[in-house]
Image 1: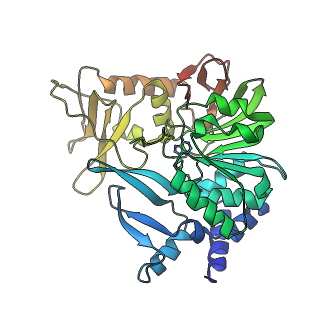
Image 2: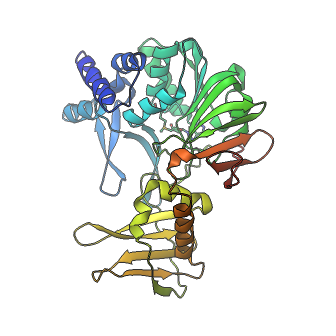
Image 3: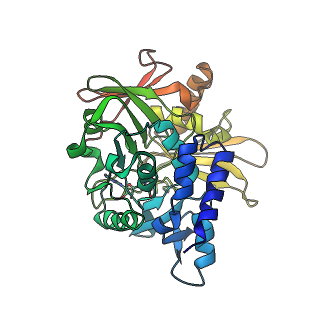
Length: 385
Ligand SMILES: C[S@@+](CC[C@H](N)C(=O)[O-])C[C@H]1O[C@@H](n2cnc3c(N)ncnc32)[C@H](O)[C@@H]1O
């Protein structure tokens, strides 16, 4: 194919126009990297964000649609597994503007050694190879088939980074220490192995499974990293153990449990639309892990939400009369939402950039507001791999 370069340049232009790319060296990487090589086919989504139809560049009738999608600012689903009626996405080519944003905040310098967690298609690894040289890039994915495909694609465009198959939560000890560790799957906390394998002066950029948080962590001492969340949310599929993809609800909603419990009916002063604010949602999730399911009316306008924790649920909706109705089971999850809202307002409605994370290899990990010692903090789970 010879016609991809203008398309790659156009994609780079559009990412620069929205300030996702702010450095010419990354712009050059996006211009020089053939995304179509890394995404030879993808799955189109239905209205419920479920993958339903393959769009394959090798099929002549798909070719136009495929090539256009590959060079637009779109994330593209490349693999999924069935779980009953649900389709769980197990790999994707991430949204180019998010890829660019994460590479920007990785703040990588010439010659630095980078470990990527989640090789996927290999596209991000190719961008890193362009920027720091393939000899400085190591990438790991839990899926051997993906690693084999990515190896072939990278090789085809002249890059031979070090690729591994395995659990990225354990890092890649062989090539450590790394100046930069970039994860492209979301973790529940910071895996201790990454802190161990990070060089002094190093930086970790990783999405967390909580509220689209994207942590930007510096090494702040032996066995310790700390830093604020990026101001932009970043939704990624969750890192999972081999053979066990997690239905994490990052694309499709996780349906509420079927419950026979008698519900408590009432009204609320808190507009359920508050849950549409991603920064409030993050604040709430730091207090209590929950899933969110939208309610829409006949005109497809959102009128409320069901929240649930897999066992209990609460639904808050605005009815035609403008009254905000709540129906909740005995755990009274809506009361939790209201309490979290009061706390959020009390702290001047903190945007996510005011939240940070501190993680140590030996001890616990926690998220904090404003500074690690502010006294407002929440424990995070330590992923063990
Ligand atoms: C969003 S995709 C990565 C996109 C990729 N960076 C690219 O440029 O195409 C997330 C990847 O994380 C991988 N993954 C999930 N759990 C993992 C684990 N425990 N260790 C390593 N990789 C994992 C998945 O197999 C998937 O390919």
